[in-house]
Length: 123
Image 1 (cartoon, one colour):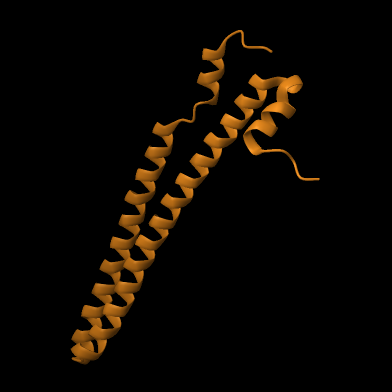
Image 2 (cartoon, rainbow, N blue to C red):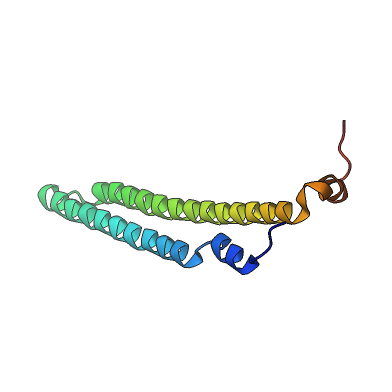
């Protein structure tokens, strides 16, 4: 087994959580600006349409539906992406743990460790 420098191996296999957090923050920030811009454009169009037609109530219902849909989609996508990122990070950590354990156990002890941890195999 090659465990000459485990600190170097740890440094290589540690995920960069800072970069992931910065990417997540940028996604929230830029998404917010896109949604805010869309809402402002819709409100300006609503104001122009009300000014031209004097039909406030009918157009207000449509604007509320569109704005509600945009905001709901924004938060739904953000929540979904956040959950996906968390699951991918946990999957990466589990994979790293499996690789480290496999490297530590070695081929000569693997069948015994597998039987001890997972139980005997069904044939």
